[in-house]
Image (cartoon, rainbow, N blue to C red; front, side, top):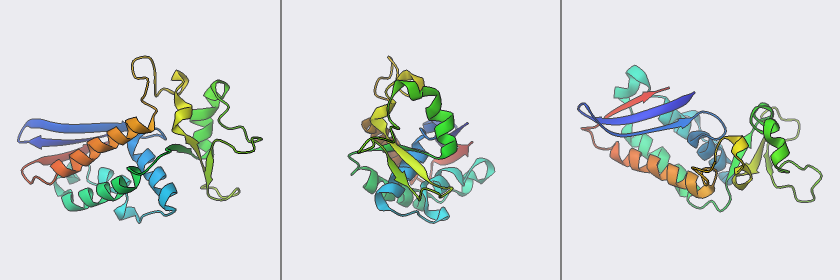
Length: 183
């Protein structure tokens, strides 16, 4: 499943974006890295997921353009400073996205003195997440990078992808453009 957002000038498409809704998607990546870096979680109506998902289908015409921009820029300030990015996984996410590829990497060596991952939440917390450095996902097994897109798993790629969202949020401020979101 993916999310698609678009801007139109009358009937002409001007700009559109889409991304997967999984641990490798742009919104999930931005939110989890923001939360990890700031050690906080924004209220539901102030987080990135809300502004890129809330005004979908028939509600698209009611998009709060200023809030959309404010939230995107709030995340941008933190994400621009990232020197190390992570993909974060719940236990279920690890089973779905990591275990099938575990043979190609030693990313979850729990015996390592300095494990190559970070944890968020407590050991027994049902919302505990493990953040694995993005550089660990170069193998095509993960479905991110391959011979045609060798850097799709990198922090630089995700920062560029987020820069597209920033350009989108700025363009959305033009009141003559129509916004449309579909899941």
